Length: 297
Image (cartoon, rainbow, N blue to C red; front, side, top):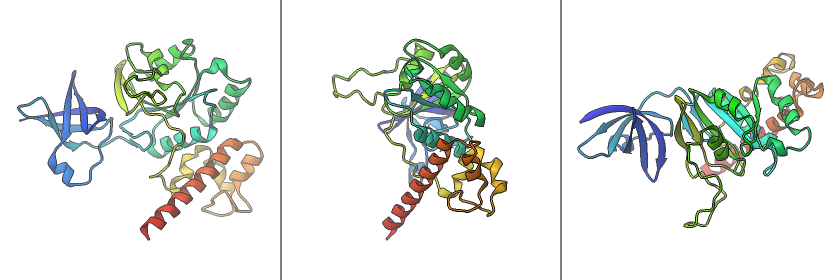
């Protein structure tokens, strides 16, 4: 048997599609891996063996550079947090959840605001004023009108990029605008199943300009199972500069009487929307932990 190494492009119906050079092999997981708990995600580098048939068997998952919890991907160079300015409306909380997950995984991230030509007055500038000062790029685009696409295309070259965001914001349309050869379904209703809201059913890597682009399924809300409350502070990068002014260490930046982070929010040095997202995520993680605790009993 010949042993090869390749990258998982997608996982669908129990099969893993692994690219080795220019060839894509359909693979299953070897029995020895199944006997142990294993984690295998799109983007993983794997060792596989080929038998007499065309079907390969994955033997081992190679060490990861990083792992993104939501959307679930491995070995990512850049998370493209994608939202629309309208239909659906931009959500600071959902954007901050995705950015928090990227920070936790130590994956660079940027924001793409699609349908910017339809944005309410001042919205794009407000978004930029929140995120650009803390180091996140904001790309305002219109996939339909091909506005802002060339700059974004250049930014994604030679990288493994993952598009993540809510349903209906135009992730697939944006990817198609960046590379028209990527034939993704962008909204047409399947006659066979009679559905059309969630056009992407599973994460897959698509070859693009010496790298890959991954389209991922959209969501209505983003659950944070797997993140822990103790790790939340590191996910809000701008807080660190003000924590030295907190009276208590560690400080939760909630009820403490003297808190540098709360003072920075009051002074406008930390965006109020970011602080509100921090409190909302903190509460969600607390409730998830309590829920898991009840399950144990």
